[in-house]
Length: 181
Figure: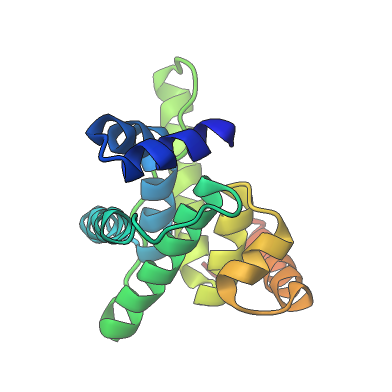
């Protein structure tokens, strides 16, 4: 967090290297989150680009009061929500497989099994209501605490916790074959 404060300070001084370090540090997590929320890589890349453009445009008035990663995750989630509001027809589209799960070398059989499991998880996530999907992904994928998820979603901590719990329960039911994916 101290390094983030230093990088923000350097960015305010006009250092392009600071922006590169911030981008390289958080790009993978933010892109994975955006892709999971939106379902398409091209949309996720647009959201990430928008977030960083707005971040640069507002850097003079920006004050880092908490975690830079938390701030950027909030921006990505908000921008993804805006994107979905703008184009409602994309909400029903299936989510493409997320690239989040990468493991050590696997054999062909393990690759097929892992791909199938990833596809089932992706399909199950796509079936969750958006608010539940967002709560699950913000907590599990980005590591935000549930009170931080509540802040990002603009709801109470209890509501965020409920969305997370209901989302996990529904995912578990779908993945265990108790509910259609």
